[in-house]
Length: 406
Ligand code: SF4
Image 1 (tube, helix red, strand yellow):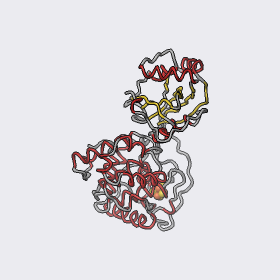
Image 2 (tube, helix red, strand yellow):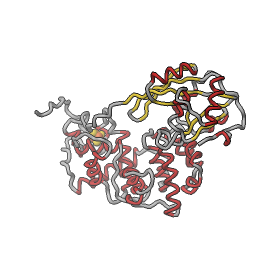
Image 3 (cartoon, rainbow, N blue to C red):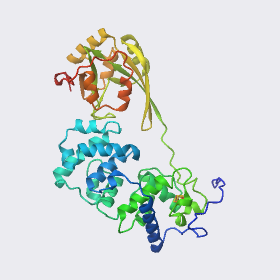
Image 4 (cartoon, helix red, strand yellow):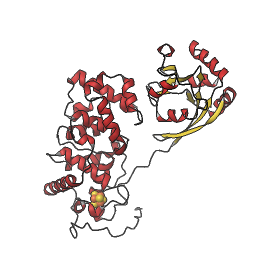
């Protein structure tokens, strides 16, 4: 049985194109050229002035595109400037330590991007003499560069006629062509890539792609698109059919998964015990306090026996909802913990033993002044805010290398 369609009001008519019928898709060559010209003209007047657009060198385009994955444009602007000051070239980034790159990335989240950025810089220097390749195939062979990022660099930095599909342009293209199937945001978006490939012009492809993204961000917004201000209104199937509120159709999101953990704040002799996240974990390479997921009951009992429950921290990671009970060990238990960590015995009977059972990449004792310099994910910093007995500051004292154990 056909799905009942929600009745929609008559579509608003765009002022400049009033009375013009929408183009039939797929578009003729002449209409594709019109779409391109209208979009570029709109972009010249209304496009966003973003720091990485002032000089579209491959290095700058690449850094901005990696930062923009899962982070809002407004937030990225500041980070981009600071990152470029610290690492002004791909060579400088390649020769930096991973710890420095992670520290510069702090606050942007999704730290895997920073590690891949660093690995990619080293490959570009080692295999391409510090010059980014220009083709999608070569770019896609580099760490952390997927189809979208490769096409963005190739078109924006090198002017190649490569299409792009990201959140904003995907929405514009789906509405423009009246694409009616659910969008997944991944491999299922193949038809949208084909629509994009059919529109991208042979010249000024980079500007065209950036214009498409800006149109999605500023005019063809998810809710209540400003069709009367849209330069592509004449070509838009969703507008013609009164379906701008129905399209694009989105795939059903993954159900969220609840995770419960206990975090342990272990303070001894003015230092806090921290662990470095392992390769297979979220935030690999970053520092955190010891914690463990698992059956909350036994952990809770162990935590209650070993320490004091300070409160809880909640946050989301991808489609996971994480709740962390934060426990601080009393002084005697912390002293015993120091000996435990030092001799490598990690009794599963203690809360700390359970927390360290996940085999962190390294453990370290860090003073308060050292904590500020550590690359830590923001949930770890929120956990530390619950620390009720602040560590005495020890200026100049950071991680003692002798205290790090892998
Ligand atoms: S803003 Fe309106 S007319 Fe323009 S592409 Fe989006 S839905 Fe179509």
